[in-house]
Image (cartoon, rainbow, N blue to C red; front, side, top):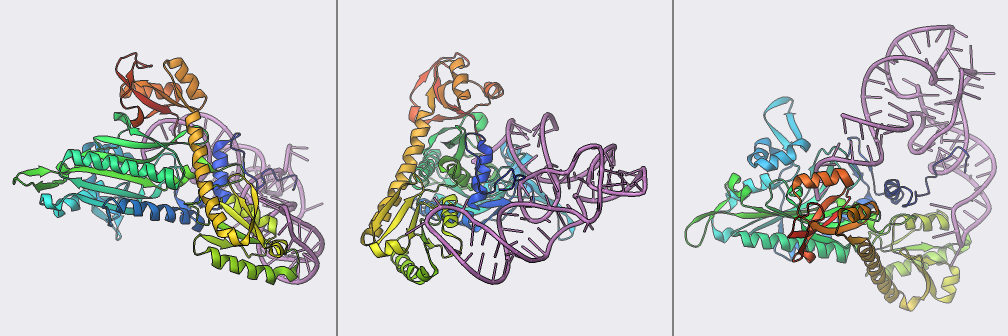
Length: 481
RNA sequence: CGGGGAGUAGUUCAGAUGGCUAGAACGCUGCGUUUGGGACGCAGAGGUCGCAGGUUCAAGUCCUGUCUCCCCGACCA
């Protein structure tokens, strides 16, 4: 290494010394994205996009099982639509991109690049729904949205991001709330089973509620630096939007009623979460279920003359494995060490090494990304071993993340203990009866926010550690992204 | 908007008190030797030093202005 070279491109900043830098390093070495020319935008590279595709595919399957269908609505929304719901426009106007010129002229009516699609979808719904027989409307769209955030961060808060947004309309308030909660439970299951990411779920406080919603339900994940990341949300919108978009139906008795609605979304932020929950100082670590490549086959050619023999063996293995796994053979001319590091940094769960020695002995070497453990496996039980290994890695990642989340969640009774716990980068559970003003004050004092009132502690109540009020509900606090 | 930092090769950077043809490492191209955990040799390509003015015999270096980017906070999926 040159003496002038302070930054070794191959190395990764250790998590403990600088978590943000580590996060950016992982993204860089795994080759997921880079910055776009407009501030806060991302160029998602093939490997990064492949992760998103897997998320899409699996989540899409799961929501369709609940009767949801996909559709697509325009990117451009009349500004006037946004303005109809007062708190909605107040919430979003600071961050919308407004188009005032197009086709070489100034427009008579400006439009916005969608920051979310409630308005344009419900305008359509109002034409589609006339009878109770048209309900419920259960529609999802996979799309990009634009929010001109003050401080963008790769994946976590990009100016433009990809997501799914589900929008439903129902005949009753009860049905809408059930749907909102159902979707939240689907997010939770999806995150835990597919992304190996444990979550807290609960209700947001008034101040953290979605602009225009009656109730916002949320899922919160713990990153390895102890900060919280809002993973996905589900909103019970009540009938607010229905009233301003004139979304009405005639019920069984011939009475005209407004619909009750929900909306729910999950974005490319989930990839940021994935990185910050599982990855380590060697690079990305991906749970097998999301990994674009589950098994990478690395041939070893100690001498040129072995190349053909090994490669034909690799081909056999590929044919055998590609039926059941996402598998890739790295036949590039890079030297072996370089390949091993490369795929490690990309987070491939299982690596398969095969060289002349292994061929002679009828076996291969498998190495797992999460623990680094290497095992030698006979060729005839290869498939079974890989299958088990992938399952084990998936479980192990979840177990570790869950353990970390549980061990780093503390219950407190007093504000002093609260501050101590927050400074120790914990998630904190404590009784809370504060106002929105109190939340603000708490944040300036401790940098922590109320993440949610967790469902699992819904029935508990006690004395608020901040205001001293009785009958306070148990809330989850953390510093957050 | 506040607080830091940075603009020089594809990337990460070095270029005190102005001075010869602007450097290194990695990466890239070609040839050869190599290949069981980040190889090595030789040859090569690659830069109007963020931009605009100014001072000077001479500016990457000094002065003035300006723009941009990154990181940390307020906002959020």
